[in-house]
Length: 122
Image (tube, rainbow, N blue to C red; front, side, top):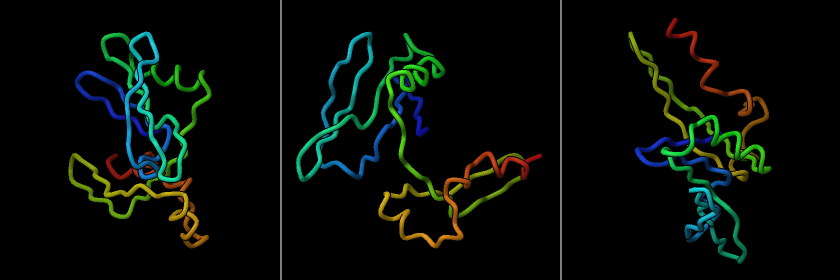
């Protein structure tokens, strides 16, 4: 699940921001804010949810997202891995559903997760 933890908020993305041309923020109550994305052809949907760190832990925020029926339909393609003595870094790019459909069938992006590469540091 694409998650960003900032100084004040935990942001959980539930839609690819490339789908939208503009955004606005709506208060959902209990400190939770929704970033609403507006599509070029019309219509809108929640793009991400913001949880104040003063009231929510990461696990509580993830639980809220799951219990309210949101899912994440983003795919990150890792295209370069840099390994050092005490670090591992990934260069990655966010794929749109259209870009993902163009990938060769031998590339299974659903299996390409960062956790797969942790053995390199051990």
